[in-house]
Amino acid sequence: MERCSSIHRRTAETDIRVSLDLDGSGVYTIHTGIPFLDHMLSMVARHGFFDLEVHATGDLDVDYHHTVEDVGICLGQAFHQAMGNKQGMRRYASASVPLEEMNSSKLFSWALPVIVAPHCISTCSTAGIDTISLRLSLRRLAGQRMRRPGWSHA
Image (cartoon, rainbow, N blue to C red):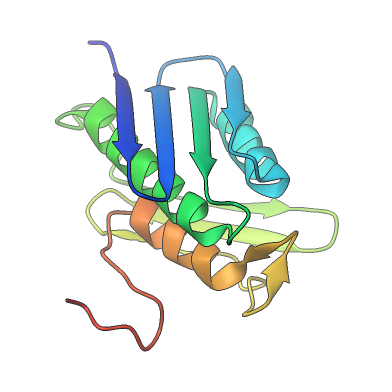
């Protein structure tokens, strides 16, 4: 069974293309125009041993948040499509990874739409990315329909 997917999303602000092979070897080509996001997605693909291509253009001259959010939406759709009926997959997993200046812990369950993000993500900017947008993109990747705090859910 081939576990691959391709997603294309075009909005007024962005044009995103994502290709994913869950049974790859960690090969990646990432071009979002946001160096920190490129780095993070590259590391996820490399250490997750799946092949990932992300090509994104967006209104980066205005703000990064449209591109960050839409890449998260496309990745969530790509994973959902590639997993199919999830046959043969483990339901949940957890990991603790010591990094240079922190310990990153993750909990993941295919049954629950949640990814636990590291506690170090505060309400500031990391390499020019608004971390609230980064949190929302992690939630979108997990399948949650979330908005910025204070926004309506219309």
